[in-house]
Amino acid sequence: MKTTMTKRVAAVSVALAATFASGAVAKAESATGGGASFPVQFLTPAIAEFNAAKGHSLTYTSTGSGTGKRNFKSGTFKFAGTDSAVGASDVPSFPWTYVPYVAGAIGIGYRLDELGGATLSLSPDSINGIFSGTITNWNDSRIAADMRANPTWTNTKKKSDIRGVTTLWQNLTPTEAFVTISMLPKTLKDQKGKSVQVVDAASKKAVGTAVVGTDGEFNVRFKHADNATYNVTVGGKTVASFKKAKDVTLPDKPIQVVYRADTSGTTNNFCQFMKGAINSLWSVNDAFSSCVPGGVAQFGSRFVGQPQSNNLSNYVASTNGTITYTEVSYITDPTRAAQGMRAAYVRNKAGIYVAPTSENYNAHLSAATIADNGFVTFNWEAKARTAYPIGAITYLLCQTTRDPQNVVIGEFAQWLISEYGPKNAEALGYTPVLGKFQTQALTLAKRCGSV
Figure 1 (cartoon, rainbow, N blue to C red):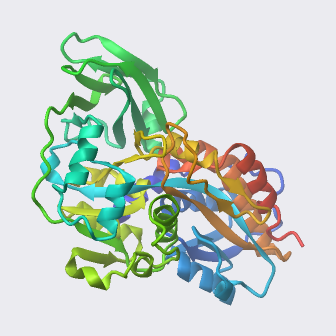
Figure 2: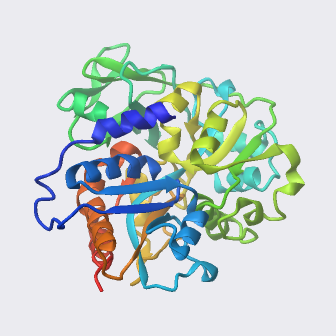
């Protein structure tokens, strides 16, 4: 994963001296931060770019939200990252604020080679059964019913001809669909201006077209026939080939659930979804072992804990028959995708099985509310047709006391929200903070180091 992250940093690290020409501080500052692993694949290249442009030395260590909040309170971290609320025991004695700066879907990630490229579809009932330990086998009748309810189009192309491109098929109606194309930043730069086509393999005619622009994620909508094969091409190179699966057979195979073993904001947000949208018996905190009804000890080796998103995602990518919850950016990582890790479609409140794309998660966020202190509350009853319901807002915790380090942290937070996020979040697998959220988030970011 270190190699992949290095490439991501190199892909987006460009000089932005002109962007920062106004409001420059007198001298370079160093500030240590850490916490949530959810935003790491967004923050790592962002910090490198900010430091290169401004001459500062901000650092961020992925420790999990729980440790991040504790270290922020103690002063070990000058700023912190968290995807969950600061509890009573972690409230600092100094003045501080939340700054929501980027969001992202949490995917139900899995590896199940026996599907042969078909994508798993899951209802809330099936998700609850799997993660509560009552669904123990992949051929459970509830999972089979989900697969029948959402006709499966299989990507039969095992490896994209362009590295850094991933493609998802999503049904809209019985005769209409769209594919979502996602590109890593370097790939997006290399492919900009090239034609994207969804091509009927038999007739060689394009049924949907687009042009690669500046968005790291975009959709191509088209009408389809059930008996056709559709190739998705970028600049003439094939990145996916979809064919409707006539009969997907689920294997008679045990399910192994992989969960975050450390305290995690990703866990907290997943547990919020489980309790708020599905099963009130779930609890909400940063530890999965105590979120799940009855605790994990009852499940024995069927449930395996792994610390931090990297380790958890690597375990699933290398182990057939596993399932987890994790940030989409870790699932769509090219190395893990090549190993067979995928993200499931999830049935939303409107009854539609949706993919964990940036656009779909934005549809869910549109029904959320943001408090004066910056904390976001989700609406689990909203019924937008395209809304993907599982995800998180990730927050930067900063001190509002005016000192040089806090001023720089505030500048960094404002730049993430107004510049870096809108340009790069989707390409890195995240959802930028836009509209009313962006306005409120910028107001909060300006509090860092302000008094």
